[in-house]
Length: 255
Length: 182
Image (cartoon, rainbow over all chains, first blue to last red; front, side):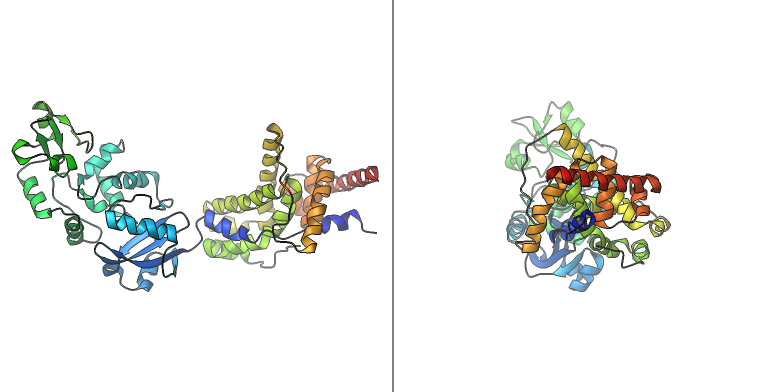
């Protein structure tokens, strides 16, 4: 005859096998996988968690897989290729210069940095914006330096295009992997960094189109579309506004 | 039942939290799950509670310094989180009674032993549901999970003598319930 205590003791069982993995995944302790892919400036290491891409670094910057792991302790396992869905969207992102549906795991970052990077991801390929534009767009116009710092610590450069953010004086500015790589990335997108800086040196910050009376950042696709003979240069948004121009609703130049 | 085999788990957690944390899950997951099966409504809830317990434990550890981690009595600490989660879940379910007849089936397969346990689960859960909350918690933690009185008292924040009487009365109530059934 079994006692109640015996019957209760017999109710002990084992937890589902998936428990440990599910817990580690949720608290971020499942090691990232990583591989080598072809990027716009040569092969690059890319790592990912179950939530999305966690790091992107050109091989020319880190060299061996061991070095990559040393700098990205979460990336422990080298695999031949990302999971199919991720691979598809990663290829597409690298090809088009737009994040598209590629999931990026920014969970380890603070709110401010995440907002900065999400905003940065909206800048289309072939266009550039000043740091102040991001600061204004995220509702924190005074935080220009903090925006620079946040972009400098971008864990997924190229994919989140911090190379498309330049100094307010119009010069290309610095980059985590050196200014030369920033210029190379912009050239890869059809921009001419020397010409951009030459325009900026002439004091031009925004350009207007005479026919529409709209002003844009010089690299905005709408500004590039208008014909040169209708183009009017302005030293600032204020100057354009005084001349009766309104800001472009696509590139939303800061006044 | 799961016992703390690694007495140095505290120290390993304090020294390298992320490296030792999987062992914390391994050490207590079976006990938590077994207990949660009786303290929640179904297998699904028990799985949720088990996972959530460790997620919360990890997040709590993030905020503790090394000395505090070293001083933790790990099993009752983890069980305090788990019992609260079971209790909250019961409350939410009571407020929004839903006829969610999730079938109890063993998560691990068709092993005859698992199936026998699954059949027993519902029967005992219904019986245990008729005890008072402190009695049910004490009976499950002691007889199903294998926690000693002192640890149960730490979890429920009730005096050890109260825990003993919860257990005694709980078993007596179960005996009555079983007699009623026959």
